[in-house]
Length: 79
Image 1 (cartoon, rainbow, N blue to C red):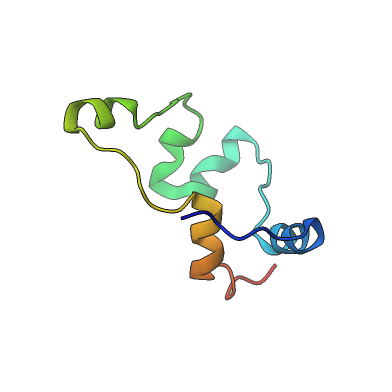
Image 2: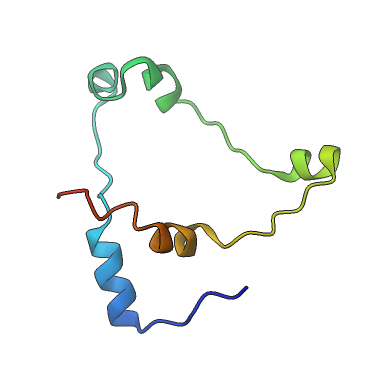
């Protein structure tokens, strides 16, 4: 299934409503991320290639942003 096309203005307005990324100093990571702070500074590239190869799995669902838009997961987030 292919996601519907949207105008650039609509897409930009949606992106503006998503939570923004912020830079923090390494010393602030434990307070910000809690127990996940130990992972925040690591370089951990990932891919589903091994999962696809070992399990014979192929992703078939919608693309991430399209799926998030449909789920309306950011409607309750206030910026």
